[in-house]
Amino acid sequence: EAGVTQFPSHSVIEKGQTVTLRCDPISGHDNLYWYRRVMGKEIKFLLHFVKESKQDESGMPNNRFLAERTGGTYSTLKVQPAELEDSGVYFCASSQATGLTSPLHFGNGTRLTVT
Amino acid sequence: DQQVKQNSPSLSVQEGRISILNCDYTNSMFDYFLWYKKYPAEGPTFLISISSIKDKNEDGRFTVFLNKSAKHLSLHIVPSQPGDSAVYFCAASARVATGANNLFFGTGTRLTVIP
Image (cartoon, rainbow over all chains, first blue to last red):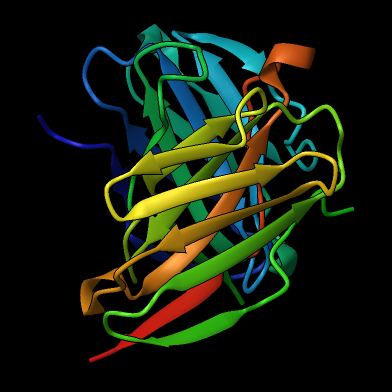
């Protein structure tokens, strides 16, 4: 079984540019999450999809961030325009069910550097 | 405002000895707690969890203890092995209380097991 895959693994962009991160969850996992870790800080929740619907987007920092999950399969997270404070590692995770006993499976993350 | 705190950024332990990683939380609505382990350039992987109705959960060399009155949990690894060297994240959820499925993470503790 393939794990959660994220692309790209690294991205370096200039302030003001646009970047799109992609996440492919484990096949059959309806729940997809985006998290972010800013250097040295905690991993913070961004949003949660159930299939193609946004279940919870309370962690999205501002309207420069747009997440989509068309068709309920892969998801994209677009940052436009990027700011310096957006630098960090963006993790995607998926789970089979929405529940305490269904642990999240994380991808390896996309390291975003905004210069 | 950080709701899950790991006050020790690093810990070094001799192989074969016990590793104790600590975590404190502030939100009394948290009802489920997890530990994740993270190797460099990889995403966090689920290790062990505990519900707030329990005070201990054991899985092989890993045991998690929960002290609700002190809002404190700890992860014990015994005996520690060099392969346990990684960053350990404590995480908490208030799903039963709030219905929200997002996790709140601490900043992590880097464990080094010395051969």
